[in-house]
Length: 78
Image 1 (tube, rainbow, N blue to C red):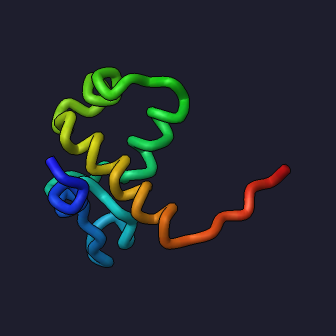
Image 2 (tube, helix red, strand yellow):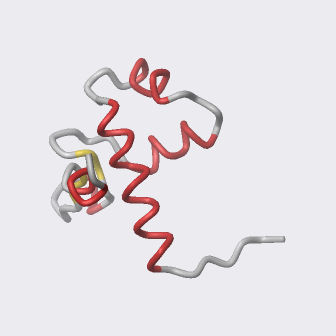
């Protein structure tokens, strides 16, 4: 599935979760998914913790993060 299609799974609504990006039809923050992956969880382990997610939802979170990284310059503490 192309990244543009994946990103459509992400919603940002000021009336849901304070406007934080979430997987569509859930209240699961994209940041929670990314944190889990960054800590070393596999996509399957994230899905075990949040069974309403699919593998495409995990890919959508990664595609969303990649799109943000392309638009912004981040300063990392060194």
